[in-house]
Length: 320
View 1: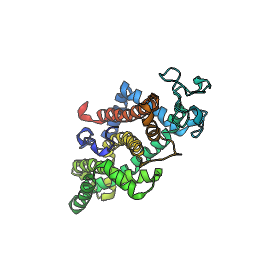
View 2: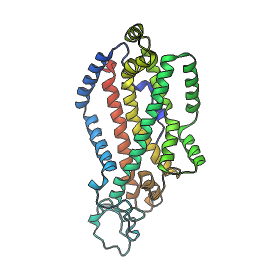
View 3: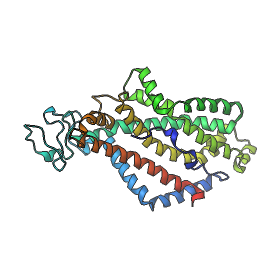
View 4: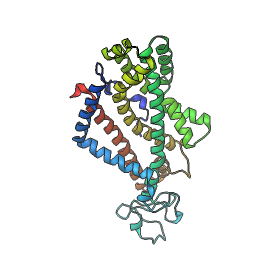
């Protein structure tokens, strides 16, 4: 299912902020970026896909009238009417009612994909928000203050980076002995903040000696005010880009951990659970059990990553 670690993103691929620019110049960059994104067809298409998936998570009943646990074992593994496969013996229900067939438990595949978006989006958004908060705070402290603060934070970051993301998640979830959504969120936050901290630290290092920061310091501004009013606004570009990529990466991470049996578990409904339940039957003449959930997962993750790439290009002044 590919790499799931946000820590594998290339730091050089993320814009390093807007050094040597004050707040007014930064505002102009955001306006230019907005105009460029509107003309980018890849960004528009990916944004529409993301909006659809988010609407699945927020308002699933607008897309389906079936409940997430509304299943009938007598019609399990029914393929779509247009898909190769034979309905189970004795099945006489109208196949048009199941456009994507049914799952191994007899649930409507279409409804399961819609209901399965909620845990994936919740995990990804909450983990991204928390990792951004932790990583940004530590990165700003390390980059702005330097010295011992930078040394301690950098060494702690190196320790967490030295632990393989997937292996670490498997280990921590096994130790927690819990497969709730909050356990998955906790583990992903613990392992996922490091790359954000490194990116923000590098941005803060490049900004702390710029002229507008020195001017604010000469006027008597406190370190706290300088960080919040001058360093942080100029570091927003790489933070936003990385957060967009993070959401896609954490969706894939949640699905992978669930697929491996240490993430979410029934009766929760998620794309990872649907894939895990269907893998044994996909090679036995029921490929739709893997084709549809894997397609939705890949398209969603790819949309977030491509949005992040488009944001990076639009917010990087050197690229224009």
